[in-house]
Length: 144
Image (tube, rainbow, N blue to C red; front, side, top):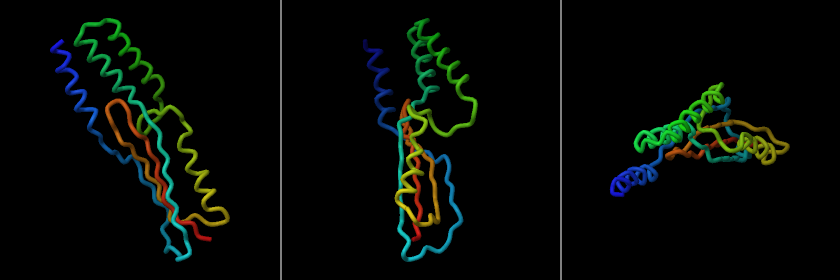
């Protein structure tokens, strides 16, 4: 039982730390902003899950405690990640694939009848152990 307490302490400390990662920043052609232009800021986010990290944790715990079923579960997770990850990707997989589609819809709604200028798009994540906050931020000006 004492060994388990020492195992939980590093996990508790790791869960309190995080790291922000900027994956990509895109800036459109920058023009002088007209005084009548309205600034538009939009943010969309979704929780991601680190499948590779979960497989690694499962394997590590299985090796530590000698559980053969857990070892095979880690191998199955590794295989599932390899088979489902064909294209390059940024960030961790999310529960919904269309979570960032709302950004374009909201930009159109907030700039109806206007022209979108000086568009800046940031793709970033706030990473925690086994989960992450996948984020898309858009800043633009709507000239009417």
